[in-house]
Image (cartoon, rainbow, N blue to C red; front, top):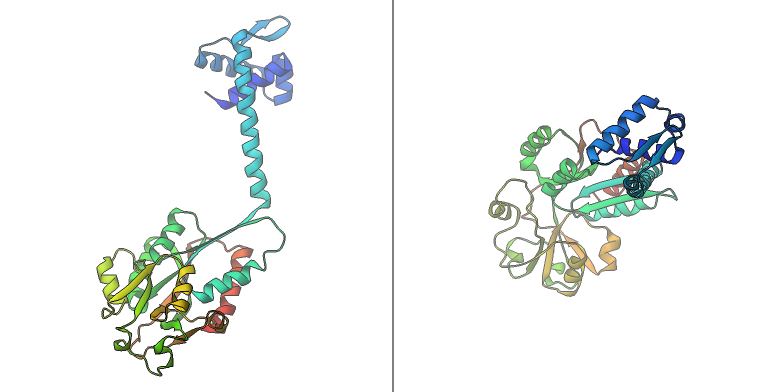
Length: 306
């Protein structure tokens, strides 16, 4: 059933004649008449009785018009909702790794939103999911994190998926732990020192398409016997601050957060692996004003902590 034909029939029913409906719709009378005949044929009913005085609804026509009025009203409502959202509501979306400097940049960015209508989507996840969010979920920006030795792999993958990448920063992971952790007072921490402690790790593969066993072996020292895998950042702070046997590998953390949760950040002399955080978006995508505000906030926190 053609919705446009339904609309023409509804206008004819309101006007009571083809000529008046033609004036209201700015459509020629023969076109309206032909559309109504096609609608009647398709439904297998007669909607109008055609008389010298005009167009009168049949009993079937009256029943049909009750449905048509409801359907056309709903269509108008849907169009109104999305037309208003398109015109007034701004949107921002980004998928990122779990990192203190990025989350702080997001907080600072949120303070620039002002009073305008806006929808913001902020997703913390791994690189594989971030790429999926950009290519399949209509996220506009992403930040992926990977070890520098995978640089060639990621550049080829981004080219294949028609994504643009811009370097945000390079860093080596630090150890995050409670100030009451016995290792907190040690000047030079080694992998061997970590053996008796509990590592907190995010349960995400770091590299798309590589087997998890290989990722774990390469990314995490294999001398750790006790690990707690988590999927979000809220519980990690409680674990680190309240369980003094725990530690976590993290990108640089702000002094404010360390002080707030009685945590310390320590270097591991054995850890020399360099990681990259790279901002990505689809090729040809034009950055919005909100995108630029977030990127500016990101630069500020990066310079502050990295």
